Length: 301
Image (cartoon, helix red, strand yellow):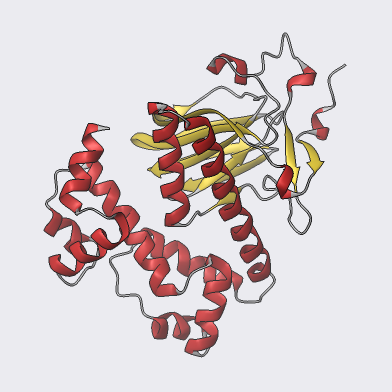
């Protein structure tokens, strides 16, 4: 008999050395404005919004996702995904399990058919000592480094060069580590009386990265010293304010290079960089290639 709905997701305490994630699906997706049917899955999914906005309804709660955020969709839990931006919303989706316990041959194998449920197929969520389950507070704002790892994973899974399974497992372990560290930073910062103000500032930085954001300006809004405000900001995001802002700008620069025909100079100006040379130097430092080369490569893949 199938486990009661409230028992999902199934969880297993396990030291991290026992985690052995297996990737079942990893792709970029585009969804037109609208809602998908409610569903359950046998495995777990990281659903990252790369452009636009989305809403996931799960457990009676609506989670609003802006570009740059992801949600953990756990095995066995009903959820409904909706693209709310026009004309579409773009995602990066990764299906996986924590213990290499599922044999997934097709995409249909991941979706629960409620007329023929297979209770033994629901994957378990790994929970390590000192951490909360990743699905407990399911929405995250991953760092640029984490997003790059997810994009690498999609590339490995799509192209499937020799040894791709091992590469995908290593990348997934790294991604999970990033999310666990974000979770700890978030839990520490949410305990402070300034978390609400900080979240408002972070949301504004995500929406308006071209603005002049300074440590002094952030501290003034929080009515704190510059050092204290910067410390609290780093506790919440894992990065100092200037590095967080640069990550947001760089992520948006990559998107604009992939999805628009704006010149490199126009993109730099639109994101608040002081000049094309400064923007180009920072982009090459992070990517290892120029902005122009990145654009050409992204349109080939």
